[in-house]
View 1 (tube, rainbow, N blue to C red):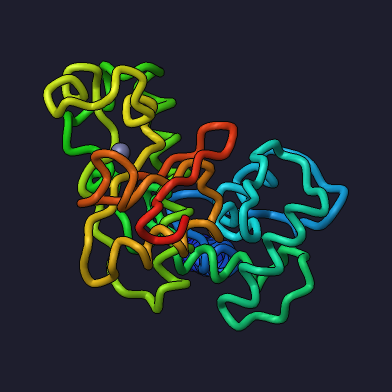
View 2: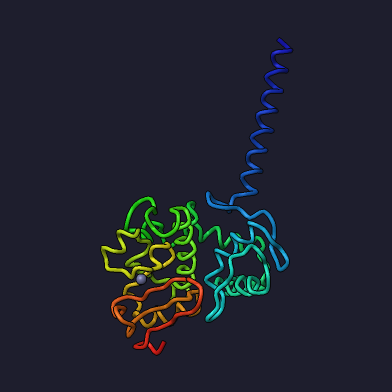
Length: 245
Ligand SMILES: [Zn+2]
């Protein structure tokens, strides 16, 4: 009997201990979500997959006319982007990504790694599996994710009002059906067309210059009077003559 009581007692202690362990582990990662968790502070000189993940989320803060390289290497441009991200959200801006910066990113990040105010479905009204474009389905979806993080930065800069995406990823078939150009970047997943309201097209086109888009086509450019086209292919092409761009 004594043995049985002792065994029950020990079992209870062990259960309590394991419950405690679970609680502690949960508390340690409470701010993280289903997408990605950073496990170290990142600063200039760091490199790795965690730097790449950070770069994707701050790529909308490269400075006017710049595009941040997503290369897994934390150099001065990444530090400057982190600084801009920090000041945009009222954090102390030291260009070092530590717990406060990561908490803000967790707060902005959905479990599927899209940013808080955009969804993969908005970037793909063509099909459900991202197939049929000029890159693999996985790459097209990844490219769309990178575009959404830049759009999140644009949205925040414009007072956190909604931004309306009228076209994102297109398979070759979807692209042909809407009369897209034969080399349209929409087939790569990283292009987004924005529609008017609540912001004017010129407001969107002008602000986009600060958020990492190499291509900005808007009012005054042929066939772009009813939307602003953004993508981040290499080499700058900005043209929206009616907006002074
Ligand atoms: Zn377009």
